[in-house]
Image (cartoon, rainbow, N blue to C red; front, top):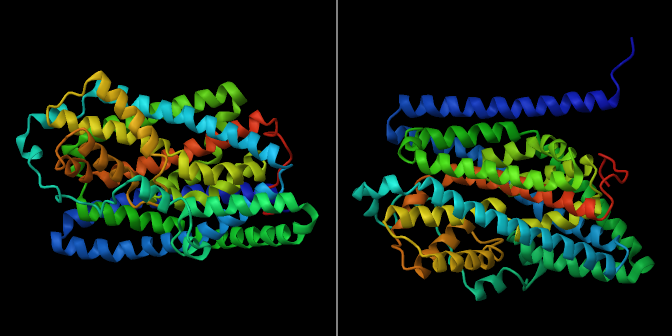
Length: 430
């Protein structure tokens, strides 16, 4: 009897990993619920803090990987392109998709908020309208301004950008390095090979780190539910359910658009990235899924140089889940206070969010920062921020998963437009 072929072993390994993620998710919810019901609030807080240490360790390991991986993969991708003409062509196609996806995301949020009226129920409950601005805060909110955007765009030092995980700054520096290496051609060949080796090493480290992902997912969910309980979902059921319904519609539209480009393979793409979507959902972190996502897109058939070019830009400019959430949440707050925005104000809101959501890479709690600024712009009460902060973690899970789907769809679309989706690819690392 012969042994299993390597492809069969890899397939069983992938299915086993997916099952372990699902099992960790269900177990985390169950353990969190039991702890929340069985212990006092003080005891639950201690248990949640202890569990969150596991998740923090995992996220720190991922953050340790992301910066050098983005640098190595993006520099290699740009350096190995045919030249400035090819880089410009792919860049224009990528940004065109980002712009179209942004319009769709913002429009879905506006239309669904109007249709579902998620804030109408809270409008009848004055207690919600008078929450202090700090109530239910889930973390500090960072303000946004053009100066702040520049701070997160142009690095003062590459070392500082790497240390602070400033992805947008790393993207800018990596693009310049890649362009310079591409122009030097053979003279920079040794440097490009060194960068390829760095990417291979980082992918191997990713394999090690991902082995503890199920434990991190279990700890993240158990900690959150142990501390807050499932009951809060009942208070905001209309808001949370409406938001997730809107996300499903956005997913359907993105995949339908991709289906027009690549056909039935769009569903294969969704199946291929299911592990990273679940990881991003459970950990509320798109960043945590980046290393594995890049590998899965290459395995799907997207050339590594295109995936390595589109993904880092997408993490900076194509936050589909966050953009849709901003429109949905702002109208939710307006409805909760009985404020009706005019058509002109909503058009202004659309344009404002189109700009501000493009400059928030590296800003802590980016979506909340945008909402805080927008509330002030439209003279809505600042205390309205507390209404969404109460369930922001639950909503952030969906936002993170949607960002993964949106960027995966973008990479597949650009590869297809370049006529290279079916190009030979390997699951092995470069």
